[in-house]
Length: 183
Image (cartoon, rainbow, N blue to C red; front, top):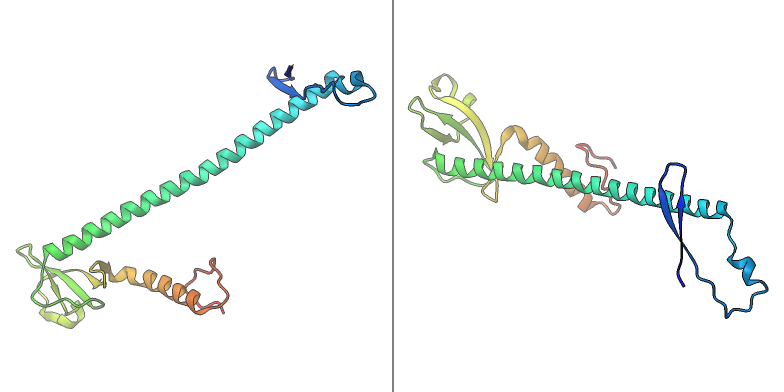
């Protein structure tokens, strides 16, 4: 026979307390005493169940919050990747070029008065006073054929140095993502 008790707590919440069934086959001195419970015992059991419910809910909520933050971060990464891919595609298709582009080299993007955009190997400084077109930006062609704006190269180089340091060290400190050497 299942022994369930409903207990009302001070906050008008009712908790079901499941008690262990009696086993009449055991050799116990007093079956009556082992089966007796005071109202305070039931209230304590109900409060313990209520407390466990609260902890389980808070733990699940915290874990779900972490997952939601990770989803948001991954969505931001996906958006950034799509934007970078669209920019690279636009630079490959939309910018005129009269030379073979070599990965690892930096190229400078200009726009003529006609609206034509083109890549040049010459920087604005190298043009000097002879520059008649509008300088837009400088990019490095990566080995995967994507383009990286020159102003973002510093960040990328920092992460590459960090990865190289991790590979070179016997002791790995994954939290040491810094631009300087922390030996």
